[in-house]
Image (cartoon, rainbow, N blue to C red; front, side, top):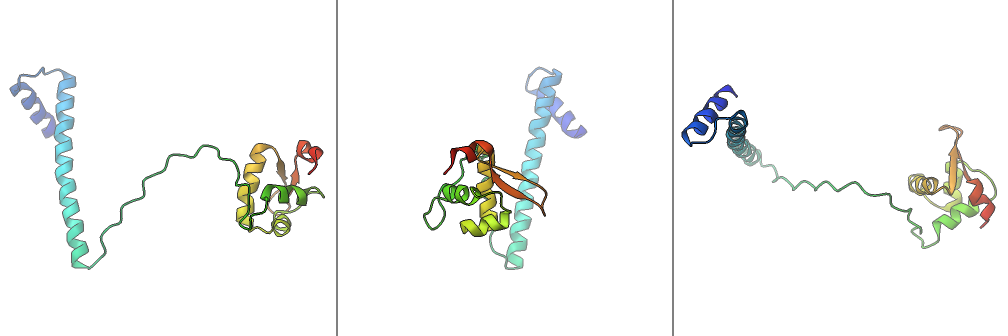
Length: 148
């Protein structure tokens, strides 16, 4: 990095630019960028050589990172076309249920039900109480008063 700084300082002085600390820092960073690009090209060549040598497939393009999703409402229908939220509310209208019992009553897998419940909890429709072993899901008081 010191050599890059000296080179940058000489380049700044030779080209007639100001030798201010900012100008030197910019020149140093530009030099470092060129050095890194050169190294990156060498690394890419080495990777390509190793892939060819060991008959490995070409790299796949990495998936672009998606932006964080905004709060999305819960999916409202299950795979069989029925209204999942109505089925959950109907099952819970008789009282609190464990997640497993609710999943059976609604006909969903527990992970799918958990996604639904998370959204319904966020919307204030249901509440979950207890720990892992004693967890119960119930309609929130306002939702229970509304009825089906």
